[in-house]
Length: 177
Image 1 (cartoon, rainbow, N blue to C red):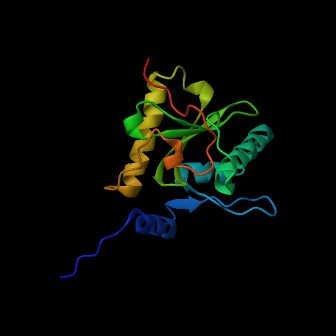
Image 2: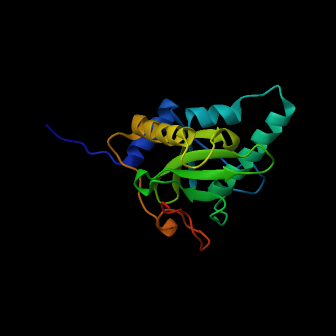
């Protein structure tokens, strides 16, 4: 019997074929993907559902543009991408802050420049950074990761340059106080 070993990249291809993951493609004319932004079903659905509320529809358009910043390979700043506590969980947030309400997209890195956006939350509903709500959305991010990639772990690092090319120098995580 011959054993076949898969890589996380093989699993990503399968999840894309199964439509459990979706690749975010930059929409702006003349742009192309330089990094890989993969969206789990909840995030994909948010971006691809038409909303009757015009303000919400416009807000989601801004969120899509903010996510495309990553995919296009634009410089990354700590105000945009931030590692959540505890560091060992490897859960990051992309901050889409304008216009209000602020939306946080959580996710983990499968490889350098490969971000898997697992879930999202409105910042105003999360409370303080140690609140139950924050803990729940971080747990949800890990659960979605596990359902997609078990037994493959995400990349764990506090050095953003190991995870993203084009990161601007800065503090991308907060140590426990």
